[in-house]
Image (cartoon, rainbow over all chains, first blue to last red; front, side, top):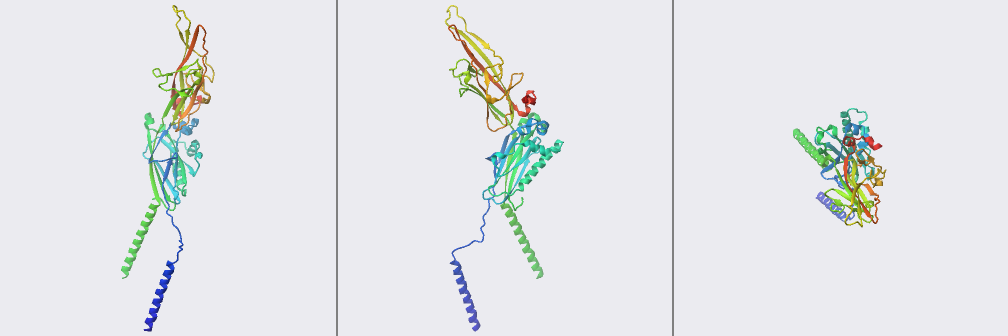
Length: 217
Length: 230
């Protein structure tokens, strides 16, 4: 019987203590959070020549050049004069987490006659500082290659490298990544050059943004 | 008993791994966005307009100084009070150079001098004399064989044997219109006016313009690129 009384007393004591602690807890008015979690926002804002880009982008300023005289020998500085250059800006949301940007630019059809280079301009650059001397870039890409096929392959490799380099950048909220796409029509590469002014080339631009800790699916 | 425990362990592990992988995929999906754009690239073209002004007023199709049938503009080359006076003449080309280009042009001119006799004998009148005027080849800044004057902003024009005037610079590609001032007035003709006769002088002109992609000059016009370095 004595044991029962002791046990009952302990239980009652425990219950009373719990109630007191609970009351004490409920009467504690100031709360401190251990940590605060904010959800980041990943969104793609693409601008083409400083205008918000639609799904379908059109350039109607392609000029056809003579590959050897204009593009390789750069007679009369024609690489720069005849370039169709377009600026692209990818802007991150102001609540964006740390982000990598993966860009894929490729021709939709296997169509000869278009040469293009991608020029990485920087992050948060000012408008006036875009590259305009394309001839120097082209010259450095094709340096050491004498065969046209090798030169075109060198340009492809260069573009791939630029895209890879851009994908390794870690961007923060509100950052703006800027690059240019500079194109020329290769008159000599066309299968039917008699109708060259009606030629149309289609590129596919895919932009993927991913949290910097993630990997692309 | 041991077999059952093992089975439960494997089952638990499988469920745990499944949930874990799904969670990872879902997390990655949440932190990744993707967007596709199609880029269509087409050859560029040119748009050119020729603008004629008198004292800042543009000559339109319905202007009294434009003959739509002949396609010529009439310029008064003798009367400073007229609205189409030669010194008030300005000619511009407005070009939308989608690709870098060069252009050449001709001003086809006809200078006409009319001589009218006054106080004539009614029985034996003298008919007015209308004659064409020819100018010496005045040097720059005059247009060749003309009293029209090149605009100073045009630069030093280049000439060929066919009478074309070449703009010395490449017109760089631009999404905006480029306005090039060609002619900035001209000299009036010194007419006679006395008790016997008076004269009137008019210039009638039209223009033609060729524009070509800057790297096709030698192919289209048959001239060397070095022509522009002279």
